Image (cartoon, rainbow, N blue to C red; front, side):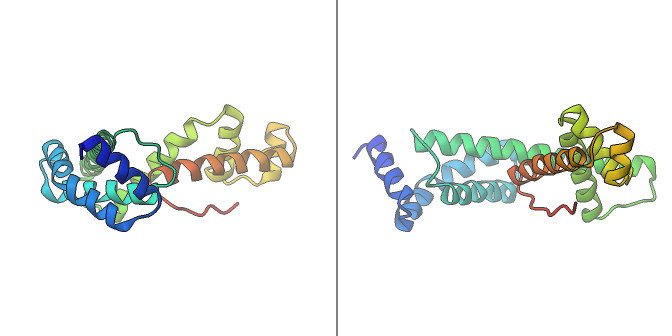
Length: 187
């Protein structure tokens, strides 16, 4: 059986939830994908984690994915996951360096670095919101204005304030889920 035919068979069985076929796919592609990730990261453990994440994502999304070539899909998924991991690592290092430069005696722990990274990520998401929505959200969450105070300040109804906050929170939830965060925001 040619690889293209084998992949078609695998994809049909995978969508049906066949765990044995998933194991076959894993066995067949694991080393190739690990090679791609390792060539980009130069870190065996990071490469293994990336490939594992890609396979977990493949299994979880098996019913919704439309894949023409399994080998191309997996190779591309590993490359994107690797670039994302490298960008995240580089950003953590930047945050750490900025902390050290501002106060050389201060050594932040991983939770502090992660919190700062998340704070910057949230700020970037908020910046993409429409102007009114962004302003309402910032007044609510950063300036701690009440809905009534925001409505008075912007000369809009309290319902409009609530709608803008709800919209902003929805955008934040969607964007955070895309990168694997699950948060509960209190209104």
